[in-house]
Image 1: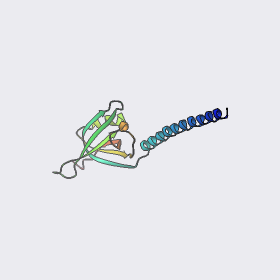
Image 2: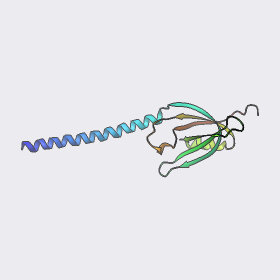
Image 3: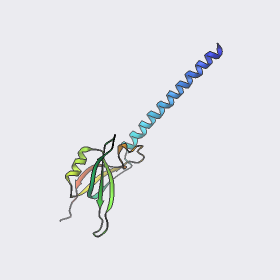
Image 4: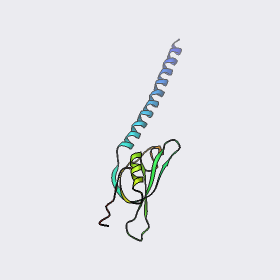
Length: 134
């Protein structure tokens, strides 16, 4: 009888421990994901011409784009890959097709899945670039 009750007690503790570890992993993973998506490592701007905008993904649809940045005439363009989390900002970028634009973006590091975007550069705003008197 004493052996049976100690076995039941050990089993209860084992179940509680497994449930606690699973909850800790789920809650910890959720907090980590939330923090990587909502706290920016850096905020910056890039200027150039949008080369491509696509909506990708099987399960998680994300807006992905490429910005061609030309520093000096005659030099090859440097490509900047970015993700646009907002459909409204994505439509605004599309409306500036062919124009030189300024993308304001936040850099997020350590994002655990590509479900949130293929890059860590999330565009938050877009505006038409000043043409410098042209």
